[in-house]
Length: 173
Image 1: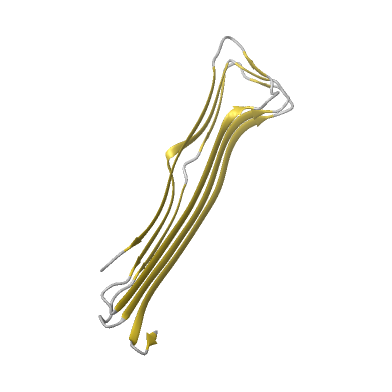
Image 2 (image 1 turned 60 degrees about the horizontal axis):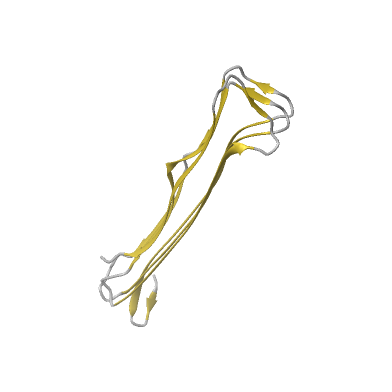
């Protein structure tokens, strides 16, 4: 039970830490020949989220008490999505599609809520740190021999949709 010469001190503290490192790869990397009479379609897709939420809102036991509410939320997320063809072997196909996709549902967020109210003296502090890193790569490496037979198409698509949010707020009760 914390107190000073002036009376009790009500304290609430919260710490939330979250981390995510994710690598998703689809590839052909060979020194031997890879041959398909039809289509070759490489797809690498990822849907991940990393969130940290800390709530350090105090509750008031006595209105003459001092109230302190502190919260810290830290989130770090690193996503990598690769789809590629590499190597020295011939890749032969009727058509070729290479897709590296990160849909819009990837969310990185940190939220810290602090509060101190209703007491003699109130102090609140909130800190939210969010680091969201995403990398998407789709392609054919330099020097990799690709042969398309029969007039087929080659499509290469890389999509990276990510939401990053850091929010630090106070709450009064």
